[in-house]
Image 1 (cartoon, rainbow, N blue to C red):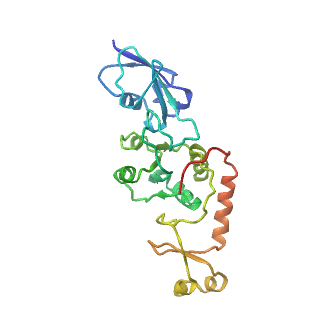
Image 2: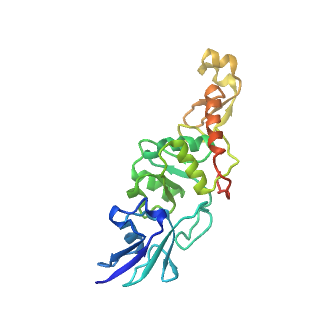
Length: 256
């Protein structure tokens, strides 16, 4: 019987199907298929793969394996520099920009708080996320393995942490994003960059105590939401700084 020997490091044990937990897998070569499809049939989405080596030669996702070949699948080693071309991803990104799936929606808000360009809506369907990938070259963040297997996605991350703050730490470390962060520079509702607004121009929209105690305001040019540095601001900033202090310095990614 035609077959392949596929070697997965233990970093992939989180993904591999229960019956394929071993380091080496003997895969029956029953049909002509790309190495991408073969690997994903074993439970590992291509977004998590950093290198594929066939008999000491690095190959891309379209490679068609032949009988008796030894294939080693290697993970992405953080920090992942998306601006550097590779065999698997020959067209690098110019900057770090995210699109977030609904299953990690709270992570999107934290990324926006840091000032990172992050598209998200609880109404997003898979087709919407794929459209952002194609048109705006964004990185997909999700827990949906099926989504991450879509061929339109070249840059993505299967978010493994459970809690939003831990997810934020995971993403900052994985992509090597060190800042300096532009805290609260984006609208938490729609991701647009905020603009300064004169208090007198929005006076009619402010509550009495807000009028009395605050003088500096920002506004979203898209949804018209107003922001100021109230008690909520200090609480959120303290939360973000606590997260930032847990991140080990690494090579910074490119973002705006």
